Image (cartoon, rainbow, N blue to C red; front, side, top):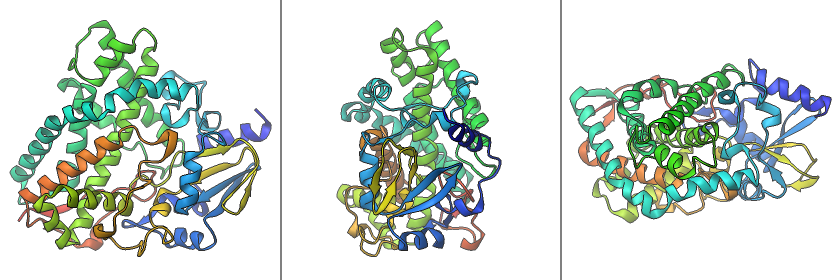
Length: 414
């Protein structure tokens, strides 16, 4: 690695504070992009975000350019571990997984996970999702008439679903949940997330090791047990635990934010809330797709590194430059969506980038859609008169995070 690359790696992995000039892609005004992101778009679909030790960082906000960058794994590399990976540390502290690997490692690892997310396998999960949602609704009713929807529904549903999917033993779930917080909080810069991530990853590495020692420790049809049984001879505990961690990472915090923020948006649109109460599948699908575009809790995609000199949008990008795609910006691109700043399910269209695109598209995207459809319809039908129980101005949203969310959402069950 060059001296420049070494300096950049140290700066990214040990940063205690992200400079204010570079923060705006990770900030929101409620669920809307901050004005500075919109101002950046006005200058073009691709703008220079920063220059660190000679490495230029570009920000993509236009939908078409974003889609093209995310799809092109030949020109853009996802493996940025040499910049932020800290590969000299313990296995649980290393950065990796599907999001930050390239072929052939990416293909090998994704091949392990894909069979567990087929249409047939996901259909088998529907009864578990129904049960988890019903339990969360009962819990809301038991703690009403006023309750925090984030704690008892937004987080409870995806956490229950992901634990069932992984086959997490009941005895381990409380500790696992506590370790899952703050995975995406960047208020303390890049250094704070490594230790937090390592705790969750080590927990899952240990779970894999325990399953290997005592098969069927958890649910025999759970993802961890099945991966150990079917791939344990080819992959070690660290690799299998890392895959399980990726499933947790993509299926818990993001879905939790989506449910809570999505409910907040729906409460501002009573006609759409009544649409959910009818439960018509086609209408529900439109609502979910529009929520994914409008809310899009994952604010930026995994960074890409240009493998060669090229033009992105209208900007000349050099080999080694970092390209960051703003998923928030792409979802609000007026060139793609008419009246992009307004929530309107009747204009919903396919092609959301909320789950990424191309080779690195989230493997659990359809599971997330199932959760949203099931949970939001059940919530609207169980509590048709649900309303906000505080002044909207008192709501506190995440200040600086890869995954945007609301810290609490007090509601009145009606």
